[in-house]
Image (cartoon, rainbow, N blue to C red; front, side):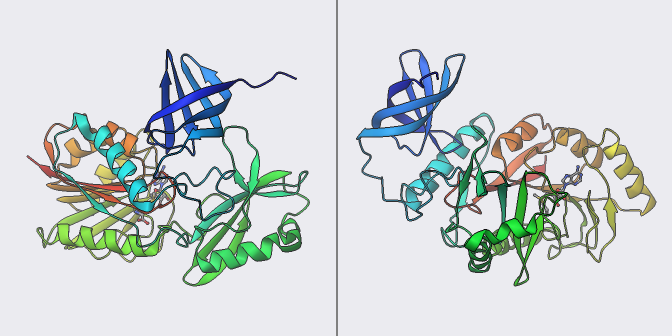
Length: 366
Ligand SMILES: C[S@@+](CC[C@H](N)C(=O)[O-])C[C@H]1O[C@@H](n2cnc3c(N)ncnc32)[C@H](O)[C@@H]1O
């Protein structure tokens, strides 16, 4: 069996995936669960073109910001990235990384809304199973191993209760019928206080909902404040889900568009917004209604909306709110914009303990 190589490291910074970054001689090494100024040894599990990926083996210098993680699964679970430090440090890393990504764009100072709490918030969790090894837990993308997390601390109390039930005596195995594959996923989701479980269904069964309800309310308040300046606009909500973000915004008329049919009272259009003819289809639908959007809300999945500039040049809204769960694709989509300036940027910490967060950018037509 080939032995894994072990290297020494000194962490200089944290990357946007919550990993410590060590630059030693000609190699950059990314090591999760480390902190700036820490030194030690890491085991390398992948390497390519001057970059290598390791896991922490031992520490010889420990950061003064290191704390004992509250969660017993933290060392092995790939889902949380910051429980080995304080929440203040976590938020500082997130803000710094967002500032770094935005350095190419002219923008005002980033406003930060910390998480209402660091743990016990997720109303939805997707777990992976393997019937052969009888494991249920988080899937590690680096080696596809499953890390069992029966006492996960980021789940809300109702989801935690259900997890406990599923892990007890491996009750989860009873949910997998004979036609199911040996490896698959189970989703536990809390909809209006009722917890449901789905097996091998697409993500967000029961309709997309934001995973942290209090943060969702805070973000909606910010959007409402924004919409006060245009009391009677025609509003278009792209990637609208059930219309969550735009339902309380000022508008005279509204159109919500999403791929999946949803329960919204206003006119709703079911459309694949990544289809090559999506923009022309939406434009022709708007002409039929007719509706001329002067304000636009865009809240795409992580892949963003690559041709946002085309959408804006065709629709020409005066005010745009771009809500993003991936700042990399957000910045990619903003860079080509010609006739818009950023009036506000907000970081909403919807996913504390992990490297994820939501960013809201308000744009104004020049
Ligand atoms: C980040 S969620 C936002 C949902 C909504 N704005 C909210 O706050 O609840 C992204 C939405 O994009 C939708 N979506 C995913 N792929 C899509 C596609 N190809 N075309 C249109 N909508 C899509 C999903 O159904 C989901 O509702």
